[in-house]
Amino acid sequence: MIRTHPPEDRGPGAPRDVEVRVLAQPEALVTVRTVAGDLAARAEFPLDAVDDLRLAVDEACTCLAGLARPGTKLTVTFTVDDDRITVTSSVSTTGPTGLPTTTFAWRVLTVLADDVRVLSEAPTAPGEAHRLALRMTLVRPALGASLGASDDHVPPRDAAVSFMPERPGSPGP
Image 1: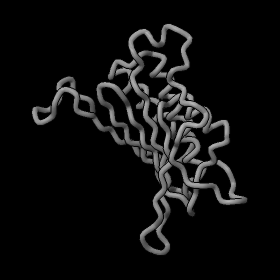
Image 2: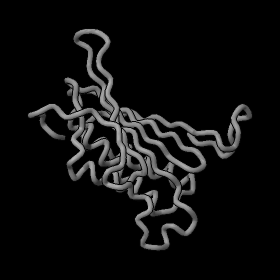
Image 3: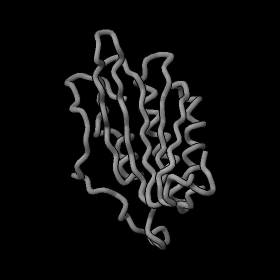
């Protein structure tokens, strides 16, 4: 829930967090895309940035849903503040899984978001699930940045990203 005025114990620039949980199935992802667009629009991001966020969230969630354990939920947390939106999407997987960084899906994510990271958490006990997450940040474009044909928001090809190394012979998303 976004309030028009922050609670008294939070300043006007304090982040607002929203968490969405849906089944890790493609037909459930429309809900997450809708929430992403709504949050960006309410935060008064430019329309191009709203669309970029929707597409990036869809791509990230689709990648993760393909690796999820059957019947598990996809958890997506949005942190909205004055100059950025950070989205962390995560699922339980069947094993230690990384996302390849040479795919079209990865390229889409790195073009649409200002920062993309793959996070992984190993189980603490035998038989527990692994947790795989994608965290991406979209920074509010400077006033007038969307008016020109600028690629300032595109990170360079050799930009540092955090990811798990691929295992030889591991399947891609």
